[in-house]
Each structure stands twice: as structure tokens, then as C-alpha cells.
Image (cartoon, rainbow, N blue to C red; front, side, top):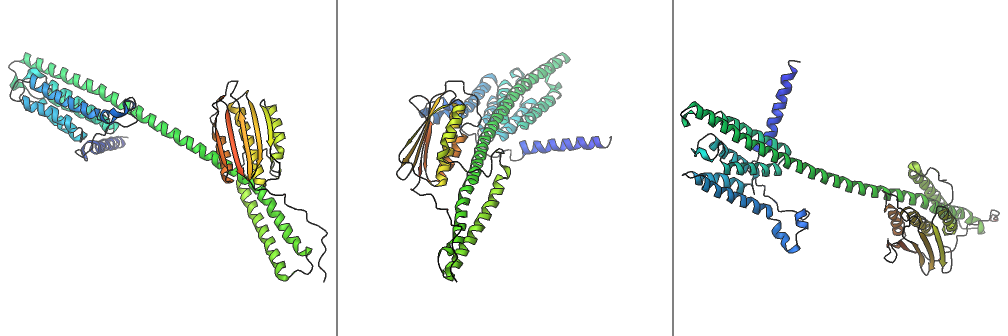
Length: 462
């Protein structure tokens, strides 16, 4: 225990000295110009556009004004030959902080040491160990330095200033006074002035560090919230794409199965088929079987983390013909739905019908979630060259419960429409405050594939 404690203290001391060197010694006079106010600053947002380029330089103007003020104060308060020197010691570091804040603080610290140790020989009526102008200048420099460096630098510059005050308080000043009573009076005045400067500067530094910490915390929280929203949107997009992949597997697997069956049966429908034709159909069937195997493997990976555990993986995917069942379920949940179909109903590709069904399903789910008590209208239009969908709901008539995932359902709809090279528009209605989703999916006219294969096809004669 007796050997571990000194090593620990030595390690802490080395760490403190290393931090002090990094903050206040390494590149102390490096150029670090004070930037103008950013466009997001509250003062800039409240300023008219024409005056913003001038308001951005307000901190520079304020520091310059303070520098000239303390210089003028030095000239008026100190009535001796050293007044000009004191004015320069007060003003130059303040002006230098616009470009080199740490170096400017070291200059002010040196000026405080020179005056505090009595090397300038100033009149004692102007304040001791810091004359009033120099005290103001040094405190301002401490605040500016703390605002532009690490948080620990505020404690370091305050401790160094306190050390300087302690050294100045115990310097032998017998040559300046002729009696013990005057010495005691000078020592008490010295201690009082030092305490006032240290107390005021400590309060200001604490306020600066606290304000910076709060501002940085708010900024980190805003960044984290932005990352969280982006991550949630990305996760929702991936989940929707996984759902689309699962659904499209069933559609593609059906057609691939038809290709394999037809390729296997085709040679038996022709009498004495050429050998090349037979080999071609065999190759087609083998490729279709390989494709089906790969599809099943991909589906196994996609469905490994399927969150919809109640869904039947073998159930057929819904089409537009199943909309009536969807509307019945939505009406039972409390949403009145009107359904209108226009145009000549015709068979569409399975991918188009499946995506259209899912889009209508998601739009009605959003109406249930975000517009409770409203009514909805679904229009399905079979037009030339494609399919049109329009889902409109009115404004809510009941209290809307909070929904942290608001807006993510649109991502899925956009993914489906983009996959099919379609167009989608979604937004609030100005007429009544409701919401409208309009979709167009290009789809050429197609007939249902003939999957009927004669199981009694006659084999070719020998």
C-alpha cells in the first residue's frame, strides 16, 4: 500500500502535466482565428438578411472595443510615466486573442506577473496586485480562452492565475512601507484584491464551461436523434425489401415451375422430335430447376428472421381479387371504406397485383393509425398501359395516438412502386385536411399462363 500510493500520485501528476502541456504550451502561439457567427446562431436567425454579414463579426468588434476601453482606462487611472506601458499590457493581449487565444493569455499572464511582483513600480492606489484595467483584461482573456479551448484548460488557467496571486501575496514588500501596520494593511488589501479577481473569474469560467457543455450535449443529442431516424428508416426499408423478396419469390417460383414442367413435357407433344430440340428442352428444364433451388436458398435466408411468425409461408400471395376481404377487415376495425373499380378488369402480372394489394393495405393501415374515425375511399382504375390506384381518407375525428414510426409505411409503398417503374404521390389534402395516395403502375395486358399440361401425352412412336 505504501509503495502503490506514491506511484499512483506520480502517475496522476504526470497526466496533469501532460494535459497542461497539450493545452497551454504545445503550439500556444498557433494561429486560431476567431470565426464569425454561424448561420445557425440564434442572433443570426433573428437578423435581417442584409445585415447578417455584419452581425457575424460582432464578437470581433466587441473584443476590439473592450481592448481600447481598458487601454483608455489605463491612461486615465494611472497618472505616471508607466501608464502607456500598462495600456499596452492590457490592450495588446485582448487584440491578439482574435488570432492566438492561448498565446494572448500567456502574454496577459506575464503582464500580471510583472505588475504583481512590483517590477513596473506603479502607484499602489490603482489596485494591487492587478491594476483595475489589467484585472478586467485578464479576466476577459481567461473567459475567451476557456471558450475556445478544452474544458480542462479553464481549470488550468484559473489555477495558474491563483498560483500567481499566491506568489504575489507573499513577496517581500518591506522596501515599499515604513511600518508594520502599513505592511499588514498592504497584505490585507493584496489578499482582498486577489480573492475578488479569482472569485469573479472562477464564476465566469464555470458559466462558460457549463454553457459549452450544454450546447455540445444538445448538439450530440441532435446528431444522435438524426442518426436514429436514419437508422430506423434504413431498417424499415430493409424490412420492406425483405418482404418484397419473400413475396416475389412465390411469384417467380410459380413461373419457373411452369417453365420446368412445360420444358419436360414439350418433347412428348411432338412426334419424333429432333435430338437437338430434346437436348435444348432438357437444358431448359435443368436451368429452371437450378433457379428454383437458388430461389429456395435465398428465401430460407430471408425468412430466417421473419418477424411475421403467424404468416403461413405456403399461403398464396394476395391479388386484387382479395381486396373485398381486406375491406371487410378494415371495416371491422372501425374505418368506413368505399370501393370503386373503373375500366375493363383484366388479368395483370402477379407482381403488379401483389404490389397493388400491399399498397392499398398499407394506405388503409395508415388511415386507421393516423386518422381514427375518418372515412376512406379506394379507387382502382384499369387504364391503358397500367393500373391506377387512389386511396383517400378524411381528417381524424378522434384523438390520434402517438406513433413513433410515422412515415415509414410510405417507404414500403415507394419501394414497391420504384421496383415496378411506377409513380407515386402522397400528401395531405388542402380541401379537408385528409390524406391522399395516388399510384400508377405500368402493366401491359397479359393473359393468365396456360399451366395445364396433359398428363396423358402420348409418347412418340418408335
